[in-house]
Length: 334
Ligand SMILES: Cc1ncc(C[n+]2csc(CCOP(=O)(O)OP(=O)(O)O)c2C)c(N)n1
Ligand SMILES: [Mg+2]
Image (cartoon, rainbow, N blue to C red):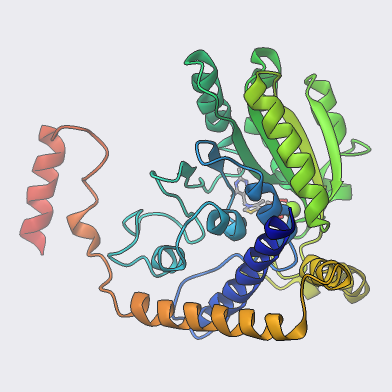
């Protein structure tokens, strides 16, 4: 358990360093828009730590840390953001839509909640085939207002699919606070309506998140159905690099939550348990910085994909005559 806690902390720190560095290369326009995850690391890293290799991940755009835990290399995280020829998704997806076929990590879809029925579908397929995997899917508080969320929850409740719904309730959906998102007293009520067990957890407490998710995933793999976990956290930064939160929220609120920084909380815990010290912290920081800078160097120098070569691929398994005609026409134009 001691090793696990330290490893968990290291992934939270890597997530923080990578997130910060990505933001710094976004500002001068070296990559497109980016969605930050600062101060949400515990909810995404600790929950992904509870997954088994054969489980499936359906994330939103904000769970960088979960992809790192699942084994996505920093190089591939950056390749997706640069949309270069190394990108597993061939530069087609919006930024932050990481995925990997070999890791069972499904890239997100831009419409909020759209992938939740898919997550339930994969869970049901596993159940029908009697395979022992579970599906963990993330979404935000805003996601609970999408129609897909309700369709997915209802189906999952009725068919008792092995799905863990992890709601990162970070207080805001862009500029809309949770208090205006729903008239329900709490998001958990929505889960109760579909007969799905609900667990509310302090999402800044990595160990609490880990234990809650592990229990829910084990329950799912046993065949005892879905769980809805509401992780209470806070979106400390803007919604994305295209947002200015000073226009719609008070500084005091941000100040309050800064004191609940999950990375700092975990560091303090490790120090008190004598598992961590300043020397180790410095060494880890240098290791992360070196890994990230070298990776940026490599990925930024890779060629960007020429889109005209790719837009007709990967939709149909065999060539389709009208797409071939269009491809030929396009080639003539270039
Ligand atoms: C169906 C749909 N409606 C609106 C949007 C625009 N949109 C993008 S992100 C977002 C907020 C989502 O908030 P939340 O689910 O709380 O996730 P968070 O960004 O806080 O992690 C909205 C409304 C969208 N992408 N899809
Ligand atoms: Mg939110």
